[in-house]
Image (cartoon, rainbow, N blue to C red; front, side):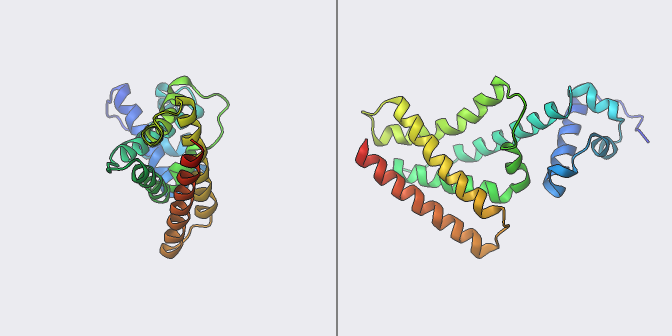
Length: 195
């Protein structure tokens, strides 16, 4: 039964987002339905559609919240050398993927249409990795820094994806981190030799 409480549309929007994220965190994306969200917040299904155009719109905003949280954690990485910065960014990404597995996998779920505002958020992740590449090789072009960041991040993401889909235990997580360290170390060495 729907609550009789009065909330603003913005409050309902936040309630919907919070409930949807909680469902994904606890039960995965496959458990996410508008009916379940509405029940969890004590409103009708129509209330969800008052604040989000459709399920794809809601999911895009959940993905955006996840990317924002990831960016926040990556921005906290502060070390002295560019090499160490890249390494710590990669480790932070791996730890984020472990701690937020269901939300993290949702980021990479294909969309029928990706809005520009969301693409800009994703580009911000790569920008954080481009900066230390630019410091490592200031004579290289911005395009080279961008390619290096995207190539390395694809490898880091690949290790996370392949390793985490098996839900590794604590020892397995250590192995994942060692693989990432090896990849980042070798990638930087090779990139610096060719830059």
